[in-house]
Length: 189
Ligand code: FES
Image (cartoon, rainbow, N blue to C red; front, side, top):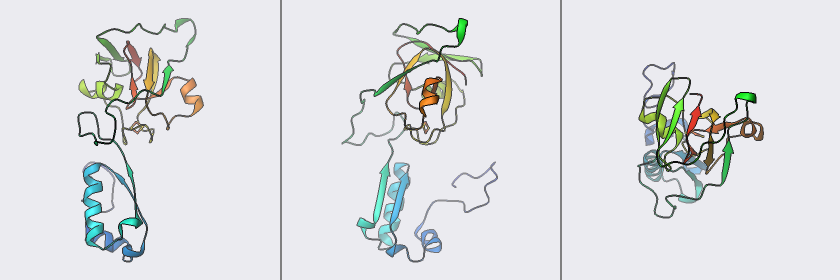
C-alpha cells in the first residue's frame, strides 16, 4: 500500500522494491511472476525483477488501460466499438423511457443529489469525478466490479462488462467506469 493514511492497513507501506521482493520471496529468480497493476507500477516492478535476474519468460503480465486522458499504448485502439448495451431495468409504473440522444446529455446522481454533463465519450465514472460524486473504483477497465452502480433511467453501452452477472445486467446494474451514453441518465450514486 502506498497511501495507507486513514486506513486500517497494517502491512508494508511504500513501493515495491527489489529488497521488498527478496524479503517476500527469496527464491524469486526461480519463481513465475504474475504482474498486474497501473503502468508505472508494472514498469517499476519489471525493472526490479530484471535487477533480481528473474528471466523475462517467467514474468506473466496483464495490462490494464490507463484512465481517460492518460497515454494510450500504440497497439491499442483509442475508441473501441462498444460490445454491448444495457438499459435501466423497468421499475413498474414509474419506469422512464430511454432518453433520446442529445449533444449535451446530462447524468443525474440521485443519491448525492448532483447533476452534470455527460459527453458521448465520457464514462459515468468520469462524469461523477468531474462534479465530485464519489464512486468507488479500482481497475477502471470493467473487470473488478468495484464501480457497480444501479442505473435508474436511461441506457448505456459498456465496452467491457466482465464484472457483471447476467442477473445484474438484467436488473440494471452498470459498471460506472465503462458505461457511456449519448442520452440522459439517472444513476443511483
Ligand atoms: S473500476 Fe473495475 S469494473 Fe469499474
